[in-house]
Length: 430
Image 1: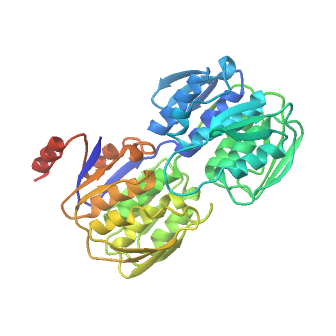
Image 2: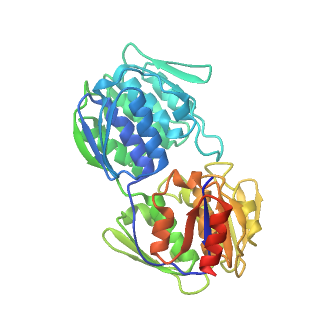
């Protein structure tokens, strides 16, 4: 099992290029099968979640042609099955987007209940509620969601909770339903907007994405398109917070600064220097940072996917900080690992109380999920001595070339596969 071995203590300095948004790409690649014409998707990240989804799309019969690392051509005209294999679903939760795509196009879909990171309950009931409102019959049998309809029709759907997945899934199905659909209390995240823009580029008629009311006028068919995925705000945020935690100076390129506002606001609040450009943002921190209080909220609030990284930054800040998680209940599983590194972090329900310490120390730790794994790597970059992060399979799901990009900023980090390579790294870095 691969792991990262890190020697901490170096401030990150330099420039880093951000890739396409994983969460947007997962929705867009799935929606690409909704036309029988070829679709070219550019700026996709080369991460395991994307590769698993492309394999799932290929197995149901679509043509998937990987032109290079960041471009793929998909043609859904050859799809021969509306039943998705459990092997793919258990690896990535976003495979559930195949429900909306297949239901919209073929009026039938069979997709197992999803897996993915174990960060808490992420019920699929809002997705199913939306499909039923559109006229589908939906049953769960032996762990498989079976959805079918003679015809899908427009509906007025009010989501009981803000859900990115449900918003995108319903949006896909409604794009090829007869009549008009309104989704109220819709998610406003940039990847919802990107999925809507992509569908519109294929001939869909979607208005209001990015607000809490989305209006969709169904069309009979979709057509070919060429589309580039939006930059990844969570990857960008991770490098921004790594710069802050290590008291470095990093220019993060290929970003949309507007998407990062909740994060830049917190970095400014705790004492970082932040400079915004048209498509880049520079973060630097020269002295010890200050405490703050953070509460995760749906976009445009502070993102739950950046909560672990924020907590690591606050572990060495001055004073006592409070981090409240309002989206997922299992998002603090990394706290025990940080405690092993000398952090003073106490979890009470959905709140973490962090007393900032002068420094962290290297330890053997394990990544419990994707974003927490990235946060623990940042902790390793801050800590004195050697840190080994196990179970990096989670991190590889969402970060392309994570160790290489960090090394380009001056980090001493290596991906290794066994104890012998860890020893070799120890000797190399002294």
